[in-house]
Image (cartoon, rainbow, N blue to C red; front, side, top):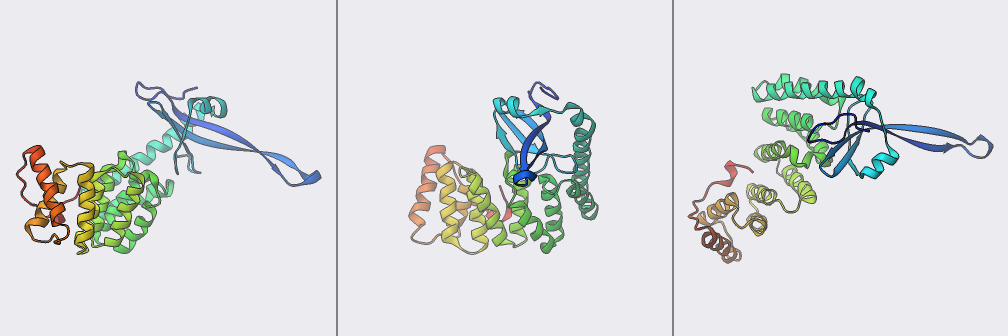
Length: 280
């Protein structure tokens, strides 16, 4: 049943499903069979399937299925996987890797070219979307970056743990390019998928600081510290706000209580750091 087996991945390969549909009415009714191809991969006890696009690469939202569903509803397609899909997946990954190297070397135009090639194969490729978006932001091309931003906030896969580094870098770049409303929407989208990430709350606080909305800035800093009372970056951020006398009188007792609790619990001696200079 498996197309490829490794110690870490029990199931990995292409499978197909068939759906019988009735077309027409009365005496003109006929049956049609629609065949769909899926890339299926098992991670521990979880099995995910993702549809193949017309270029034979996995694209679009992933769906979780059970082993029972895989056995009863899916048929393995090992030859199709090895002869068509796997080579296309390798080619796509190599293109994105090449683009990443160009971007890291500061060659933004070559990076844009390679990312664009990748996106022609898979318009929803997360790494290529982040990469070309970062390329535009590094060049200060906000109009093109806006188009990528609108695509990324609709991609659930963009906010998965495997893309954490790119996700953080893109959010920081949005903020540093003064795309504050976009940055806020971006982080709020991430929060809708992960409500217990203190770094998200802290990054939203940074955006509110840039917007000079200190009450909301503190509100999200407090939420970050509710989740992780010892979160060093949030504590330094809060210390800096306090030292700069930016904390409104109504929120000052709460701010002092968070800092006091952290110092008692960890014996910390905090010195403030300008939060605008960093990012989680």
